[in-house]
Length: 639
Image (tube, rainbow, N blue to C red; front, side, top):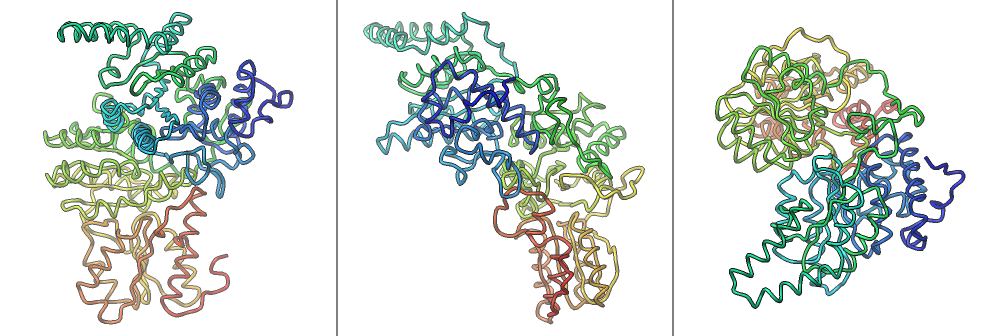
C-alpha cells in the first residue's frame, strides 16, 4: 500500500482536470493513493467500503479519459462513489462522509456538478443515461454519457427496460457493466485484453461497416444471415450475445484493475462512434487492495468504523438484539411449526434477517436479486397456491413495487406477509433509505393490515400474528437498530387484529403511539407528571384496521389526544383524525394533534439527532403537549 506521506500525486489532483494533466505512467500510483484515502476515510466514518475499493482504477481511468463534468458520469446506486468524490473536489471533506452536515454516502446533485444524477436505489443509471443522451442530441451537444452499473443491479427489470429502449433509439451512450461477482469468468490475460481493444478499435468498426456495405448488395436473406453470423461469432468469443440482441455494441470482458487494459479501451470507446449504444464489460474485485475486505465473505460491503491495520470493526455492544435479528429468529421458529412458511427477499437476506431463516430452511428461502417488483408478485404466486410467504423488503425499497402490492396482492386479497425492515429514519444512509412513507402508501389500500412493533417482544408476537392471518395481506414494520432490552416471550402469540393496548393510565392528555416512539412517549409522560399533567399512553399496534374503540375511549375521557408515529403525513395520524372527525369529537372541543415526520427529506445524521430535529423525541412530545394545553414549556424540557 502506498504511503501518503511519501506520495503527493493526490495533493496535485483537486479536480479531474488536474488528473488529466498527469502522465499515464503516474496513474497506477495515483490509484494506490486513492485506495488508501478511501480505506482511511471509511475506517473513520463507516460506510460502503468493498464496492468503492473495487472501482478505484475504473474511477481514475474514467475521469482521465472522459471530460467530466461536461461528459456525464452516472454511478448506479452511488455507494461505490467514494473514490469519485475524492477526485472531484471533495477530498477535503471526505471524512465528513455520512456524518451530520457532511457528504452524502451516495451521489447527490446538490453536492457537486460532478454528480449529474442522485442515487441511492439501484438500477436507475441506464434509464438516466438514455434520458441524458437523448437530451444531448435534441440540444445539439456533443458530450459523452457514461453509466456505470453493477452486475447485481442488472438483475432489476428497470435496467433491461432501459437497455431495450436505448438499443432501439440508437443514441450514443456508454454503459459500463461492473461485474464484481465473478458470475462471468474473469478475463484471461493478454488475449482477452487484445480482443477488447480490437473490437473497440476504429479500424475494426470501419471493416465491419465495409462488410455491411458489401453484404447490402446481396439478397436480403444472405445479407441477414452474414450479419447475424458475424455478430454471433464475435459475441460467442466475448460473451455479449444478450447485449447485442438488445442493440448494444458489446466489448469485453476486460480486467477492471489493469489500467493498461482499461485506458486504451476507454479511449477507443470515447473516440469511436459505433452507431448506437456501447456496453463495456469490466470485471473487478470487491474489496480490492485491502486484505481484510478481500478475505471477508461480504467483501466489507457495508462496515462500521474499523481498525485499518487489522480490519476489526468497532461495533458498540448491544444491550438488546436488533429488530432484524429478532424477526429472523422468530420467523425461523414459526417455520419449524408450519412447513408452509417461505421467505422471499430482494438481494437483502442478511439485511432483513431472512438469512437466519435460510440457515434452517434453505429450500424455503428465495433471494430473487435486486428485483422488488418481481419479489412481490412472486410472493403473490406463492400465496395463491396456499403457501405463507413472508416478503422481507426494506421500507424504502418496497416503494419500488407499489403497483405490484396494489394490483397483484391487495386487489386479489392474497395473504402475502410483508416484513418491512428499516421503518422510520435510518441515520447515515439518509433520505434515500428512510422508511418514512410505508404506512401512508399501504394504508390507503383496501384489504391491507398494518402492524408496527413498539419493541422487540411485540415484534415476536406480530410475526406470529402474520403467520395466523390468512384473510388478505398483512404488513409488520420495525426499525433499524437494537431493541429496548425488554423481556422476551418464549414464543409468539397472535394478537387480535386491529386491537391496541393502554400502557399507562392518566386522565388529562392521551398520547397514542404507533411503533417504537412508545418509549419516548412514556418518558415524556414521566416529565409531564412532574409538572402535574396526568398522561395516558397507549400503543395502537395496528395502523389498519384502526382500533376505533380505543380511539373513542381516549377521545371521550381526555382533554387532548395526540398521535405519535415514525412516518410521514398521511399515515396513522391522518387515519385517527379522520375517525375523530367522523365521530364528531372535533365538533365537541377535543384538542387533537398528529405528530409526524416533517414534510421534507431529512439528510443523513444519527437517528437520535434526526428524531430530535423532527420533534419526535421526548422533549418534542413534552413541548407538543404543553403547547396543546396552552402552557409555557418548562426550561428543562429539552435538556
